[in-house]
Every structure is written in structure tokens, then in C-alpha cells.
Length: 271
Ligand SMILES: [Zn+2]
Ligand SMILES: [Zn+2]
Ligand SMILES: [Zn+2]
Image 1 (cartoon, rainbow, N blue to C red):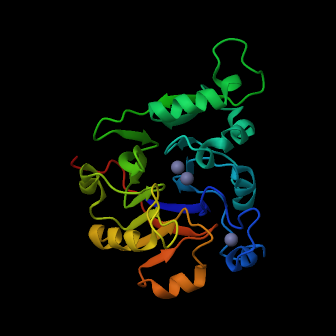
Image 2: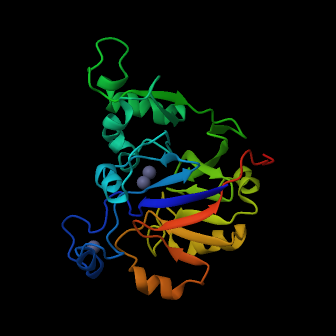
């Protein structure tokens, strides 16, 4: 089944331009439409008329308007950092008509953070009447966990993000691994035979909680997908200059980039 993945945002937590910065990349990013303008990271996966989001960052409202997102059927969360969850409240108008609530999927640590941030939404009594009608479901962190959405398995891929382990997802021929500093050995078999690998590449210098350019290139060589796209990018990487350095099958993502791929139902993955 044909699917489209859209980068709603490709930037790091501070976004590009970064507030208060006068560097050359931030100056380029001040021009609307410039590929160095990077909003906070998330992707939209569309197949069979369904829209599945991975994360809702603080720029979700503007991203959804830009991409003409009229409905959302489910959201998978990677972890509870602000740049990945703060847009949850913008799901409100898209959630009101959903019987049983718009389903959100998060591991226990992420769900606990979301319940604290959006206490007025998730409280059991005296809920704020027009808060988002969402149904937050906990995803197990046991190996081989899948979330089945509209005939497609989203396989949870454990990802090291500094000293914490967060959720990446594989769906058909694609995998989305944001906020990755390393891959635990048990995740490697979940990432074989990929068409599209999307992973974190923050900057040129190493960083304690994010992969850097050289390490991400090394991971691409190790996993050998047909195509790879880097995301969660800071103002350290100028779009055209870095793309000119990369092999042709490896590119920096940019906001609004759309990729077509095969999202086969019920993939078989050996954990
Ligand atoms: Zn992040
Ligand atoms: Zn800058
Ligand atoms: Zn993070």
C-alpha cells in the first residue's frame, strides 16, 4: 500500500532560526521557504485516507495549516520532551468529533509527563469542558511491541537518547528515529531491509544526547537503507552545503519534504 511521509518539522528543539542567534544559517532561515528554516520535529504518515502523526511539537498548529491537515486519526509519541509533545493541545478541534477520543500512544514515562503537562485534559473528574478529547494509551516497552493502526503495524524501536531509552517506530519500509544518540543492539534487527531511514543528525560536533553528522552517516552505512534522511537539525548545518557533502542516497530533510514509500500491512519482524 502506497503511503506518504511528510516532514512537518525537521529542526532541533530550539528551532532554526534560533532565538537570539545572528549566525549565517539563522540569517538564511529568516527567509520564508528557505530550507534552513526548521520547525520542531515531527512527521505525518498518510495511507488509505488515514493520517497518523509521530509527535506534536510546539509548531504543530502552523505545520498543520501549512500542510492542509484536515483530520488526524492517531498520534504516536516518541518521548516527553517539550519539542515533541507541546502541540498536543492543538489537536482539540480535530478531536471533538472522535467517538471514544482521538487515540494517542506513548510509553509510560512519556504518558506520565503528558498527564502532568496537560493535567486539565487528563483528569478523571471536573475535566475542562473543551479540552482535547483524547484517549492516551500506554505502549509497552517490551521487545517486539507493535501499535496496529488501520491495518499497519507500527513497531516500537528502542532508541538511546542520552541516558534514557525512547521510542522510534518502524512502519512498512520506513523507520523514524528522532532524538537518537545511539541504537541498542536489540534494535538493529528491527531496521533491516529499509527503504527509508530517518534519523537524528543534530550538528557536526558530538553531543551527549543526539547523534552528530559523522555518526549518523556511519549508522546509515551500518543499516544500509535504500534512502536516508536526517532530521532534528540545528543551525550548525547549512542545507545546501551539507547536502553537497553527503552521498546521493543520504539527504538532510527539510520542512514540508514528502516521501512516497510502501507501507505493507503487518510486517514480520524478528525481535
Ligand atoms: Zn527533540
Ligand atoms: Zn544560528
Ligand atoms: Zn529529546
